[in-house]
Length: 310
Image (cartoon, rainbow, N blue to C red):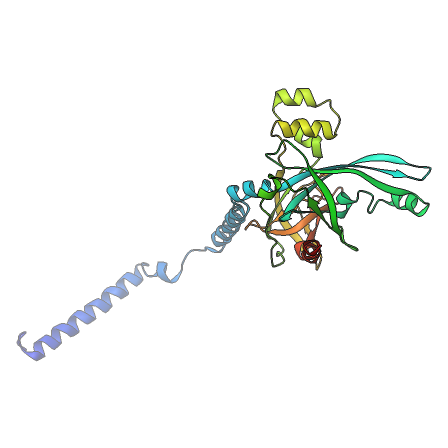
């Protein structure tokens, strides 16, 4: 026999322990314990559910990633634009109001749509009258900003020749000199990216509708005019609404998104999650919830440079 204290004895004991371990593993395998390791349960369905939930959570996080403070700060630079114009020198002369939105894009300058700055732009009926000797006359164009009880006079600085864009000059006052310009994004947004539109949908009517009950009862029967806008301004009720959506498509000069808008929302800034302007709200397609149209900020940039030089 080998002495357990001898090297030969230690070798035999090690070999015995190894054989016993192997036999134990084989016994466990025969009992089906190892089968659980080699045949994991079906998890593909669960993995799909987890992936879907993860995507939904990520989407919600993107939608909620807009900073409330950043949006509130941006709202201060977004104005309700009101104007009156008439067509003279033609048999079908008429007088009409214009309601829209604009935003401070540089010190003393306001960006908006051309059809807000020149309400007759793109109007086929007016275009026909102009061809027959009619002449449009802009009687008044003013901007109402949040926090100001008084309107700010506007003058046209420059309008785009082939795009629905315009830059207006703000009347220089102590208030307007404090307004913070919104930053234009240097890049185009991507399809699926979250955006927010700040605007005045339905103009005075929309602001009256969301006013306190006492004010609503008094102003709901009033006309959508400068007097009503003045009362809202005096009560600090001039405030743009924020709507949210996603980019559906991007071209070289246009954005398509599903953030809701309406008449009066023309000219409002389309903001990305960083609070930068990626577009200018321009129009919407009736009957199609994803058919809100904007003009890319890149189209505004050369117009702004021209206005700064003048």
